[in-house]
Amino acid sequence: MGVTRLKRKDRKNKTTSRLEVQHLKLATNLELGSRSVEPKKSQLVKNNEAIRVALGK
Image (cartoon, rainbow, N blue to C red; front, side, top):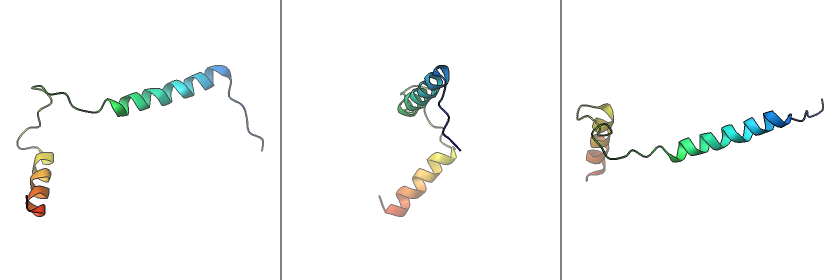
């Protein structure tokens, strides 16, 4: 079966969506602020503490 070429609008959508995903990946760092502070009883905080204890730090 032959390879089908994308129409112009589909090529544009493909690159646009790829760039959007790349932008979102780069924008995942949390900004400091009251809403981005991790709650004390969060599982992530517990996991990080367990890792810290396991590594002996």
